[in-house]
Image 1: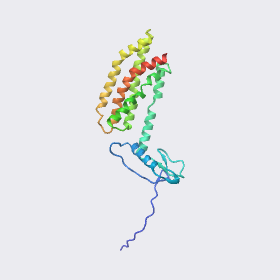
Image 2: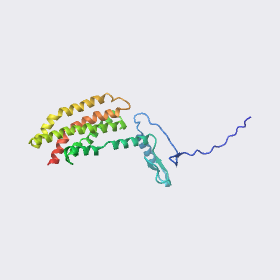
Image 3: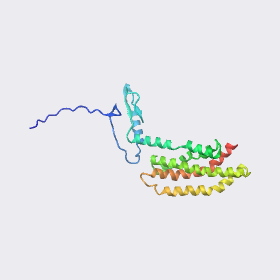
Image 4: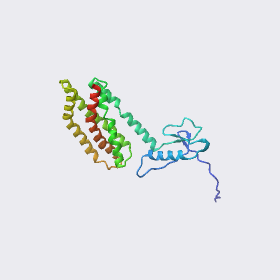
Length: 239
């Protein structure tokens, strides 16, 4: 009925986006689950290998190789999703729009720089916070960093607006800054503490831990620096 015969099958041809490719997959688990850690480890291993006269392959992180005459190691899959997510959230981090709104509010191009200056200072708390918890900087961490911008800008506006009000009443700049710090400290502090307490409940969540760490530690550092950096930069620019 049947005659069994073994023979070699044709070699499978893999293509990716219309290009010839050899696909290698892997999953990360454990302490470092973000794909970037595994990528860097593989990159180091590739660099340490002896590739002879041809040299090591080109390593690409996005898009298609421009030159197909050599071998290109293209990172895709989960890394591509991570890259696109961070890129789109970076565009959403519309500091320029915030800057223009503050320019319209105060009628000054230098004053918004004072108000926005504490935003990057949140990283002083975010980075050590992730290190303390042994957590990778994930997409939710980036979301928390972006969300902090609105809170920090609000605190800065509260402080600067009161300083300008006191100056408009004839107070000296140093007296106006001291009055602003004493008067606005409570609402700034209570706003930060309320957000930190709310975020602290998800510090152990496996998905939103990065968001909680960014909110808790970023708010703690930026709130402290807002009350110190804003007056110093304001005096420096006015001088």
